[in-house]
Image (cartoon, rainbow, N blue to C red):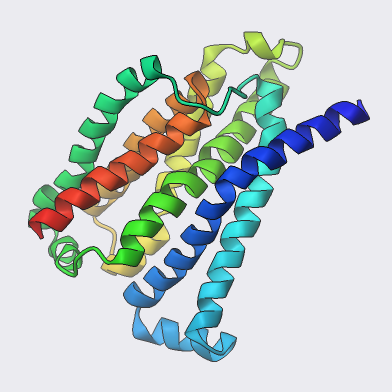
Length: 257
């Protein structure tokens, strides 16, 4: 038993080394993005507390490392218990299935500028600021990789494990019913969307029906696809999907704004 645990820890560590650069770069660029886009009084208060903007970026980087490290290692044992660990590689047959969907989702994500930008003035004003380098890179690294570790690998896995322990305790991990994963995916998507509401409230200063719909559309719909791919093909395809929609949508927006 001890040897099995040590082997699992070794495999988890080897996989995390691939993720580590994304956690570092994501943490740095998220910190820079916060400085660029947060209200001046919030940044001033943070700098006063921490000492400098560089310290704020360092804290953001440490948070990215700690969150991703914890979620990856704990999630590894959860996902293993659920029978969801798959070889960390990309296969041509699967890519042919998911890539057209990623392109369609990327176009849908970019449509926010053209549709909601016309309906909500604050959305148009924010887009008109342009896509900074820090925003672009953080969306690919932290958004595309680290958020998938936190929300699919760890959180969706945890919800699925709780459901298994309540309803399917004696079920073999290779025979867990589909409804467990579907329910966990929906809960994770809803929680991810709801988690954006405080920031949405701060940004708009209000929550209207249209703003609420936008929040759940931009976050929940995509999460359902990523959760399905994680369960069916492996976490790397959820990461690819999240990475891909940001890449496609940001390139479109850079060209049109």
